[in-house]
Amino acid sequence: MNSSISIAEKKEFLKWFLKNYRFHKRECVWLINYFISDDLVMENLHFVEKAEYCPKAIILSTVCSNEVPFRFLKENIVTSDVEKSFHDIRLNPEEQVFVQLNFQHSNKNPQYSVVMEENPFLPESLHPTKQYEIWAGLILDEAVTSYREQCLYEKINEALDNKDKETFLKLTEQLKRERSSMQ
Image 1 (cartoon, rainbow, N blue to C red):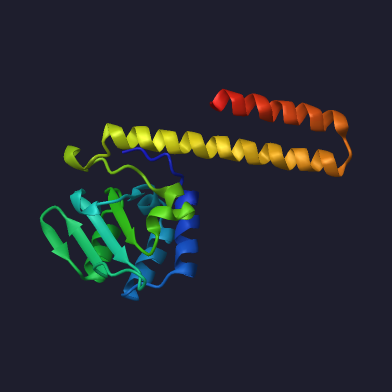
Image 2 (cartoon, rainbow, N blue to C red):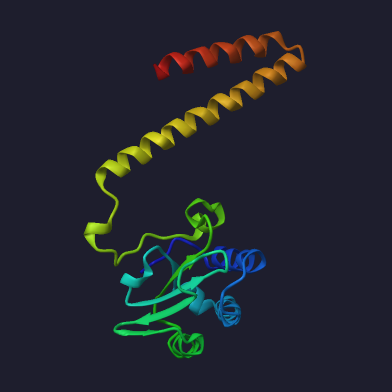
């Protein structure tokens, strides 16, 4: 599996995560620090949702989550022993490892979303439906439109502050055109 997320991005995220969250099990901190120290492990590390469907997965939970504190899954083996997972990863750094982090508002966290990847092992029945894709597209379009409008308002206000009539007229005309195209 080729990841479009760079090792540097993953390391930066994990360092940020360690500064901002506490795990139920303190051993998870040294596991994460080991990840950060080994580029081959980082290259094969993927952040996903529903990691339990992956052939080799680690599920880590912070104290702000009610989820299971730690799980390591490899094929048919499941353990809550952080040390066993560490040794397996250390001995097999070339194997893909899928990590799920459970923490408060993880689905809304911009730092986490940067490193998140689609879970390639998710059963078809759990993939987002076409309807969700359409809704997501509509929400994204609305957000982009709102952002563009906000930027135009800021530029219009700046033109007013600078008493720049020409720019003001040009921008208000552009705003009118964009609003009429939305209807």
